[in-house]
Image 1 (cartoon, one colour):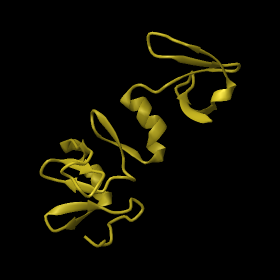
Image 2 (cartoon, helix red, strand yellow; image 1 turned 45 degrees about the horizontal axis):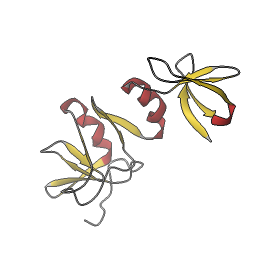
Image 3 (cartoon, helix red, strand yellow; image 1 turned 120 degrees about the vertical axis):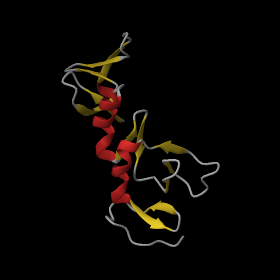
Image 4 (tube, rainbow, N blue to C red; image 1 turned 120 degrees about the horizontal axis):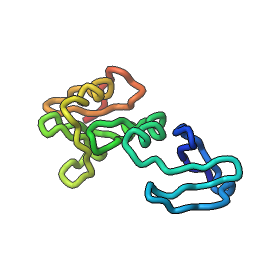
Length: 129
């Protein structure tokens, strides 16, 4: 099984777990060592974005990275994105004022609310609401 890790140059690499020869606990988190290199888990927002950004994750607030492929609904009054139709009990992520512009390629108006369509469809087409 391959997992995304950061190498000594802070570049993301998919590393096969079976190639790891040692796990070494450190004050900055575990160091994962192979015969040819040492790796570590991404721990800061910048590092996580470097690893998961290519997979569709986007920083919408200082404390979250959101999988934009799974966002369903945006509430502009509360500045929250939801991942399910039922927003009352659903999981949500906050959106900072400075990051609202990142949603524009994904949203279209539907009455008083904003809906997220497929991220590949720039300036979206209507879906049944």
